[in-house]
Length: 114
Image 1: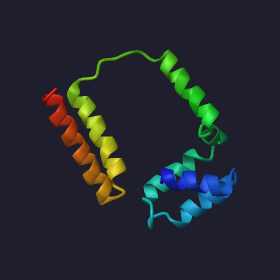
Image 2: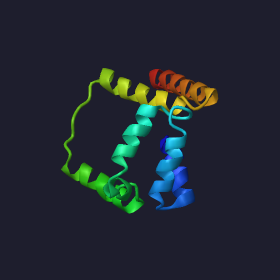
Image 3: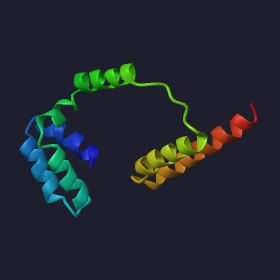
């Protein structure tokens, strides 16, 4: 859904109602109705759209980095986070999934042999 919103923003610019309307049409067809409902609720606020702009997003991330703290993450938790992202990215295609598994296997092989 994120990719679709990004594509719709490129196509319709700041026409928020148009973007929301298209997502409503695809609710329970292309996208989970729960996701669409949550998106519509969050995207009602103009600040949501503001933080999608490159400059605002960059500033937000930099503030987050500046005010954050360094924290050690146990390997098990880091692996769970990586698997979560992998499942999101790999859900789009069998090729992407196979590629990700191949890359991870190569990394594991080379890290043991270095």
